[in-house]
Structure formats: structure tokens, C-alpha cells
Picture 1 (spheres, rainbow, N blue to C red):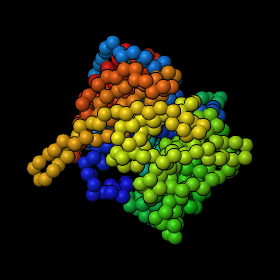
Picture 2 (cartoon, rainbow, N blue to C red; picture 1 turned 45 degrees about the horizontal axis):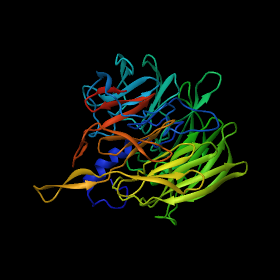
Picture 3 (tube, rainbow, N blue to C red; picture 1 turned 180 degrees about the vertical axis):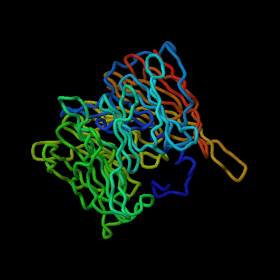
Picture 4 (cartoon, rainbow, N blue to C red; picture 1 turned 135 degrees about the horizontal axis):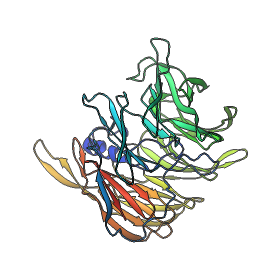
Length: 464
């Protein structure tokens, strides 16, 4: 896979660190995207913050004294398969994913986070999972063209839906599900997803009827579509974010005349009417949307190489870009850019292990801290392996009073978000990035004054 135009340069690093990029917490909040290491709180549908890089807990101000609780779950597939095996934390429950006995369908198992007790296990019938979201009562999963809803408490199937298209077209999705939560029932009443009907789902062939598809949260039936003729599924994932009243979308667009230059539309829709509130054109593609108060923050990339952090202010008449800053990162991580946001700063990984805190309102750097490189190995000839220094993708998580940093090599550090002072660090593993697989991977989940770690063998440790 060539995600940055340099397919021949150290492919083992790109593949391995793309896995690490998927372990990021920098992602949209309302959608609760199913990526490994995601910090998933409950869906927030108020018209303020929608930010899953933030966890509303008190951080650990001193180094943890040790493991307060430990228990096994099941052998996981982290580092070897991007389609299954990555655990998720939702509302006091851990969900793990693995293949069934015939290695065909993904098996989903729920575990009590505090006790480690197995709650239920189901065969999803899905060959892989594109996204995984929760409204607190139900779990929603999907592949390219199948939606699946299960009861959160029991794992029982609520509904399964495969939107149909007229042959030779099939229904194809482009990104993660976003939920709209009904305020009376506190359950999802509508699902939004970017998609189109395509002739060849595997190659992203000719498409028609592109846009934002709307499904009924109660049964998965198609309710309608917000047409967007310029949407192109082949240029990237696109992004959706919902704050309850408004749906924000970063929609990748391209025409033959523009190629390979990329454009995208940043759009806000009124969810009562599905009408456009405002629309802006941006160079490149926006991804990892975060809404912090009246600001939208996202990574903007052009031609899969140059990347910027954009901060836009939303006002009554539309949105205005407050500032943009080019990311000077030199690490090999495909299209992923590590960042996190709180109500004062954007925290961003730069080049050679540099972590920066940028003022949310101005983009000015307020402090920086440099992390040491991670030791890796690379083939140097047919039978020779040499050691090199790498700067993998960090994982950044903000809390009320601590910025947690995973350096990409197995170290967890706690920093003061105001000053950048290092409070403590703890080595969880020695992560090894190999040519064919990555070992020593783990998922980190903050809780009040502590954190959970779940490793590839399924062992869960609560550090306090």
C-alpha cells in the first residue's frame, strides 16, 4: 500500500508504523471510531466538545505504585492483522475481536473491565470490521457494505442490514459510522456514513449516487441520502462528526482535470433539515476531526505527503480558519499524524521525537519536549539485519490534568499539559517493529488516577 508516494522506502517501517498509527487516540469523538487504543467515552451529543483525544478523568500525577489488578482475556491478533484483534473500551466493558475457529468471521467478546468476567461472545458473521461505535445501549459495526447492530448487555443481534444497489453496482462505504442520539430515548435514531454505489467494491471502480447515507438506528433501513456528486471514494476516507444538532463533514473531492491535486469540502449540515449551514473549500483532505467548543481541529493533507494542522472557528455565518501549521514530522507513519486537543492547546508530534504544545487560539508554540528514538531493525541485504533509530507515531491522550504520551516504542509518560514538565514514565514493553509483524503492542486506557493496559496475549493490568 502506497500511502505517501514512497512505496519503495523502508516498507517494513511504513507497514509496522501504520499499525502504530492506528493505535492513536487522535480521532473524532462522537463517532467513537473502532481503532486500537482508542479512548472511548460515551457519545457526546451536546453542541460543544466532541473530542475523543480527551478523557474526562483525573490523571495520575505520580508514577503508579504497581499493578492493582490483573486478569486474562483471550489471545489477540494485534500487530499481525489490521482487520481483527484490537480491543476497545466502552463504558466499563472491554470488547475483544478475534477470528472464529475457521478463521472466517470475526468473533466479538465482552469482558467486565473491573472484574475480567466474560459477559458474552458472538460470531459477528463479518469478515472484518471497518468501524465500531456505541450509543450506550447498542453496538454498531460495519464492513464495506454490511451494517450490524447488537445489544450491548447481551450481545444479541438487534438487526443486520445490507443496503442493496442495482447490479452490477454494489453499496460501498467510505469511513466510519456517525451516530445521532435521540434525547428522549438516549439511543441512536440515525446513522450517517459516507458512501456510494460502485461497480467493483474491491478496486473502487465506477461509482454513482455518492453522498452521505442515512440509516434508521432502529432497524438499519435506508432513510435517505444527502447527495454529494463530487465525493470520490478513491481519494481517501472522508470524515464525519456529529455534535447532536449539526453534522460536520470533510468530503474528499476530485475531478480528472484536478488530479493529482486534492481538494475537499468542509461542510456543516443542519440535522433537522439536512440542509447546508455553511461550506468551505480546503486544499487537500481533512481527517481526524475534533470539535472543541466552537472550534474545529483536523489534520489536512495534500497529495499524501505534506500535512498541516488546521484550526477553524465556527460562527453564526460559517467558519473561518484561525491558523494552520505545517507538520514537520519526519517519521514513517503513512498518512497518520499524532495530535490531541484540550480546551487550551493542540498537542502535536513533530520531527525526531519532538512533542509540541500549540496555543489553541493562535497556533504559537508554548512548550516542547523531545523523546528519545526507538530502536528498530531493518534488512540490510538478503541475510543481514541491522539496528536503526526510529521515531514512531506517538499516541497522545489528554485528561483533566495530565497529558499521557505513548512514545511508540512501549513507553508511557505523563506530562504536565501546561508546562510540558515530565511527571513520570513507565516502560510497559519493548515494542519490536518487524518486517512482517509487530510485537509488544498494547492498548492504553486511562481511568481515574490510573490506567489499564491490555497486551497481545490478552492480559489486562490495572495500574494505580
